[in-house]
Structures are given as C-alpha cells and as structure tokens.
Image (cartoon, rainbow, N blue to C red):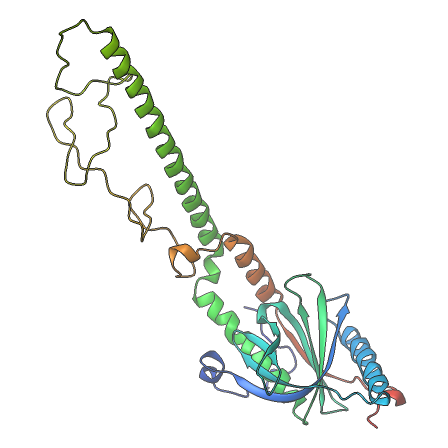
Length: 304
C-alpha cells in the first residue's frame, strides 16, 4: 500500500484515528487563494504557485484589501474550507483528489496542497497562511489521507473489479427483466388475437372449452392472476403464483434485491458507480506526497 506521506519515516501522527474518522480537526488560517498548476506533484510547482499568490496578496494589501480568514476542517472525508462565522463551505477537497502537500521551512506560517478539481479536472494549488502550525496541518492532511486509504481498502476498494462486474451484471439483469415484460405483453397480444380468431371461426352454438387454450408454442398462455390464484398446467400440477411487484423494493429476475456497493437504498444506487470507483482507486493509488520545503528564496517573498 502506498504511504500517505514521504517526508521522514520517524514522523509520528498528530492525532488519534478516531479524531479524524469520527470527527474532524479544525484549524484557522488565512486563505491566499488558489491557482491552476500543470502537474499534480512537485516542489517547483508549488513554489511557483506560492510566489504567484504571495505577489497577488501584496498587490491586494497595497489596495487596502485584507486576506480572508477561513476555517479548515480535516477528516477522512476531505479538507473543507469554510467561512469561519457562517460556516459556509467555500471549497470541499476530497482526499483521493489531493496529491501533494507541503509547508514552508523558512516561513512556519505558509502551507499548500494540490487538489484535482472535481468539475474541470484541473489541478489547483491552494495556499494558506496559518498561525505557525503549517507543518502540523500538512501532517494532519497526510494522516487523514492514510486513514481514508485504509478505510477504502477495508470497505471493498480492493474488490473494485469484482464490484464493477457485479454492478454490470445487475444492470444486465434489469435489462432482461424489461425484455421479459415486453415479451410477456407480446405473447398476451398474440393470445388475444388467436382467441378472437377462434371465436369468429367457431360454428354458431358451439361451446368454448373450459380448459385454457394453448398458445402458438403449445404452452399455457400468460395470464394476469392474483397472488392467491394459480394456473393449472397440462399435467394437472399447479404453478406457483406470479410474484407481485413491490413498490418499495424492486427484486431482480432471481428474486434478489439489487446489488449496492455503497450500502445505500435502491433509489440511491449511483448510475456512474464504475467511474467513481475508478477515480477513487486511481487517486489513492497515486498517493499523497507530504514535504517540507523552502518557498521564500528571494526578498520579495519575505514577510513585511
């Protein structure tokens, strides 16, 4: 399994697993903004992004604008960026989309991470100014990533291919159910036409047989029956009643409930489950690189 971080092997986690899996860790920071980058990883990539956003902050400061304060909530479900007073979610970065995280070794306040945008699929670099806890925040993101990856594997991520195959089979079963229903109505229409033809061709005064007529395949025709009633066959045995369709839970062709990899209700079964599982597997497989590096290399980057 890929390690969630690659800085030093002797680095210990900052929090208990329960704190990140059942709750979240909150940090206050100033949000310098985000900018598009070309690669998902790389010290040079984030260094250029930090320089760019720091320069933009200097321009805004000269114009009298303040750097907005935000609250970061880190858990195994992602990194949320919230407005601290209203708790409005400004950005929500899922962990499997975060590929690189770094803090500034010369400026203990600056940290950054690269996340793949869910809509545009572009890589965005987010830059923050914290209260001298940049290293702690990056390690917390690394720990959350590691825990999320483990949870993904334990909950069935290692069986993604099997889950995809079962989802495909479930879809095929539903298609067969639809085809079976259409065929049943077609056979019923044929039977109705045959009955009408027999009635019109029968001599006057003849009595129609009480036993069910055979269809064109020499079989007892389909008939709409109640759950309590049965249909006799040619040898006198009784067929089981047709199962009534429940409006609450839809059963498949074999009487089983539809497969649900996410343990959600039938109506919540995601139509794009395969692409989502592929995306999560690819993101976790890439891993998260956590580094401590130097961003401030020239005078204009120094804090004023």
